[in-house]
Amino acid sequence: MFTQYAYTTSISKTNFGTATVLQYFSVVIVLVVSCIMARKRPVLREILGIFSSIIGIFLVTTHGSFSSLYISREGFIWGMLSALAAAIYIMMPQKLMKKWGSILPIGWGMFFGGIAFFFLMRVWRIPMSFDREIVLGLIFIILVGTVCAFVLFLMGTTMIGAARGNMIGCVEPLVATLTSAAVLHTVFMPVDILGFVFILAAVFVLAKK
Image (cartoon, rainbow, N blue to C red; front, side, top):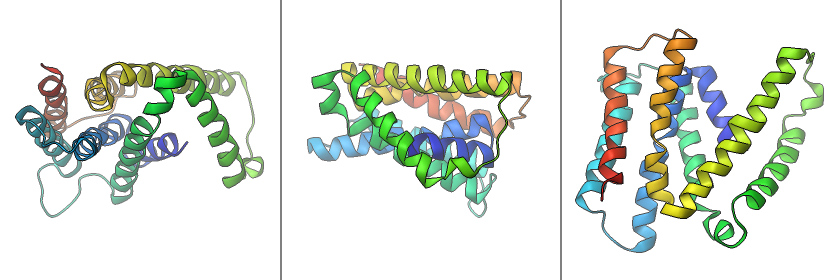
């Protein structure tokens, strides 16, 4: 629940592509925690992947400035919170999913998350009118953007591990950037593209045997 909430809030404070890139700082969090839990030092390609991700995040959020953020402070904070939440939801249910598969834990997680969010946000007090576009949009977000995305992604992490699965999932920022530019006409600066390249480079460095 908090992963989705932090991510969509980050989008509202920045833009679709940038919020997606910020969320993938979870790559570094998962990798570092995995190394600590396994009590092993990261190998050279993992170190290169970490630094590549960090450089990419730095370029996207600051445009190379050490004194100011290019995006809003709120957008940056929510982006980092979404990264932390994503890292937690990737790593915590691994044992559950190996025993029960991915659909059952995700289903229960979304069920309880929905109940919690319903009462925390007091959604019954939010004025909203339902028309055809809103209903279709909600169905798409629930089934495709949430259920299918989470189930397929976590199934992959159980097969190849949380760290590697998260790294390969980093192609999402590329898709988000292209979609945002093509459909929403978001304008990205050359330094943004360079930052995305650094982040995606981490995928190939860490996925390579």
